[in-house]
Length: 311
Ligand SMILES: [Zn+2]
Ligand SMILES: [Zn+2]
Image (cartoon, rainbow, N blue to C red; front, side):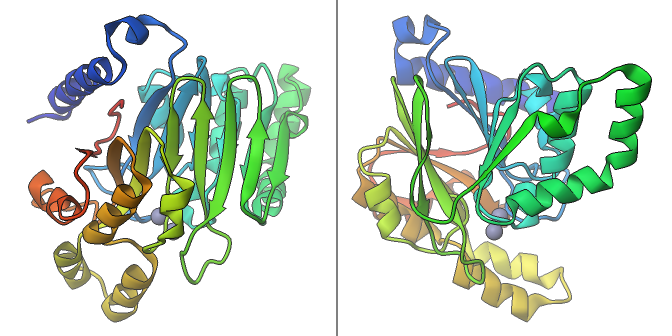
């Protein structure tokens, strides 16, 4: 099946899901909160199939982007959002499959005519990363300010670092909170919870089994959780030279299908969305295999995420 056809089918399927999720009346209101998976493959390597991680929420039409792996700018565009509409960026942790497109994304917002400032939130390191990108692109930014009369991009981005669980930001539309998760060796790795007027969405970020995430996600409508399929990582490991170290890293820092089910059940969420698949580049793993372990513990609705799927 070619890519366009697949995307059409995913789009059609997710439209149906959205209608079911919201009911016809609410769905028609443009202000309802929309959740769109931009990239669902865990890890930094590139795949022709799933794109690297990024998740979009549109709350009262304003885009909130959680993580921006390589290609996030293009996936944002593919979801119908021009980069210059971007207003808020949230980084869960500083692995490159969550931040590699951070600088380019902000740049692309400017290049397409950034109208307002961007607020970027994330754990320590975000400020330094932002400054490093200004150094990286200094020649181009200075040239375009002088030559094309553009505003100074560096004055349009506001960085907010945080280093503990709690409220990250709040406005009239949404309250956003963070919770520390378990993603060794990284100490500062967070999940985010978006409590909008019409629905609550929790995004796990990268974590190994973290029972406390269930308390954080208590009563949420949707939990987007990372997932690892243990039998599948053995195939993945056959293809890399650093197999043993990588196996240890994956098991210590990601969540098995069974444990995702435990978290979702304990949280009592209505809908569990699997994303950040490890491995994320093996189409031979079926949806049934992804959900089998989860189902042992969780009886609610399970969605096996796809790029550009709306939930
Ligand atoms: Zn990751
Ligand atoms: Zn990670």
